[in-house]
Image (tube, rainbow, N blue to C red):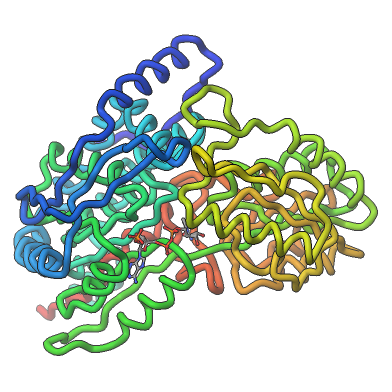
Length: 515
Ligand code: NAP
């Protein structure tokens, strides 16, 4: 009997025993750093001469691990292996597939702090963010397993006398999974196990910045009973291996999470029919965001300040849901800005392995350079209120930064910066605030801070985002509670962690029999 789903609780680090357990895990994982991880193709480990080296963004001299790197020949073998394994896996009892996910969830739960420690070292996540990432991965395993069990008999349709109609879901085939590095465990795990539990076989190309944590997760799935060939793990360059997998005629479904440009490229390439391809490829693409916190004049100012700071600077603003824009009613603009400045200047920036660091580093040199280049744009387009400085001498550290008085159409207010930068724009009334909030190409998350019920009702219809939050921050969606996915250029609105997600990895079949 499967228990009803409940999300994994977060660790309370105020309690000494939890704090100590986490410190111990950090120490243990530190001793394991530098290990090598191989590809997994058809159940076999494959070692290559060419490798990816993953380093700690807080201390670039510290090697987290090396990972074998696939080329196109190995990607081809992985697709063939997934294609062969599909014939058997697709007919497995869905409950047996779900049980593999439940076993994996309990293994990760037992090693929770170990996984979180890898997140601390590999992508610079502060303790609480790392803990939430691991909890979310466990949630995806538990939730998608249950969703598949619910779907296994299909859905009810009508039958007339003398006929029986059935409406069932069947897997699609070889699924290419391409996750990002920012929710390095959760999104990678969720996008991998959703197609698997649905009966598809998977070729997963992890993000190069977080390939070690992906390798650790793949080990857990193997230990949990996944048959060989069902999951193939091929780290490699996005351009070389990613394109090859997307283009492959045997690829049936692509599940991508990452930037707008790569998502668009994948959609375009997936629409081209390749020689020998007799199906339309399906694409799930969850992409970037430029998310706004709107503050009304009738609003609790402390709630607004907290929502802006948490949304903007959690995980150094490296969330697709990060609130990088604050659009504030002119009557409370100065007060909100002043209080956000004061709260921001209290945030700590440092090595994420240390306790009570609010913001760790940004993920790599490319991210650091890109974010720092926006500091110049911000100075030209607006007024620097605080921050604006970085230091990449040891790791990629950037101070939390606020720019004010920006034109809603400025680059700072339109482009995804993906770093610890929030930009303020003043609105003359609530209608204008919503208009500004909607004026980007993205539509992922948004928050409205208001005590005016009519304004909240208006936002329900007019604020065009996939995840809308009232009187709280716009980050931190929880699996099974706040299904997640965006509108417009933010993606295909797949609603990860929601009741419709597994069905996106399947095709519905109607079977009608006459007696
Ligand atoms: P990214 O640069 O687009 O990379 C995402 C993945 O795509 C990585 O595995 C990357 O591999 C791979 N890739 C790169 N080029 C490719 C190609 N030509 N063909 C196939 N795959 C390719 O994004 P990121 O920097 O990892 O993540 C940050 C972005 O993700 C932000 O825009 C953020 O908003 C978005 N995001 C969206 C959601 C959501 O749910 N909407 C959630 C999280 C993040 P390499 O690492 O090897 O380059």
